[in-house]
Image (tube, rainbow, N blue to C red):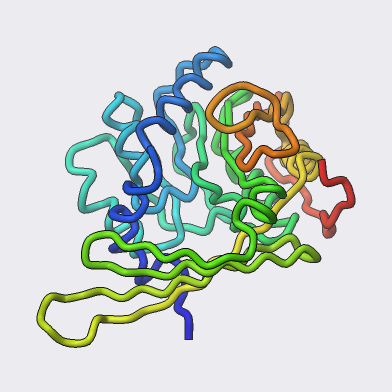
Length: 269
């Protein structure tokens, strides 16, 4: 049976993701967003930081980083490589966490928010982030769009091999729930001549409309929400596969924000 996400995959995550994702460019993009919105944060929260590839890159730029993730296996990888960099880690669900000290800004990268499969989960996560920020604090994150999950990812099978790890990535998209299910199968060659070690994981992401995301952010206490095609500052279009969202914490927001059921939506904006 497929295992829990980011348990077995944790020790291979950096090898695969550094091969397929230009993380330095993603961090440069975040810095450009900070400049565009005229913020100069010193202490930055990385929500769902995982093994902390961008966390480390941002810390090397001089930011004091706080990484939150529920996977102990992923955080263990980050702990091993952070050395003397200004990085703190907190093991917690991104829908239910709090920090002992506030941060100046928050980021969440590589479609981690899409892993929240219910609308109320968005509100809970956004509320936790809002509580960690000062008034007018900036929160920026990316998400796969509906087009990205339905068409770009779609329902297809992709083989990948990096080093001694062979893998099969099988995507299945359900248009009714707007959930993309990724089945990962890995074979690790230990080099001893025996059978490769095989393990599986299942990952799920849900697509949300801009209307739903904006509504969840506003419900959690954010305002001034902007959407961009990822990598720049052009508006989101019908063929945009990944969008970047930037929101500011509203002044005078109450500490507790009520969630509500729903969020299925009919506006596929």
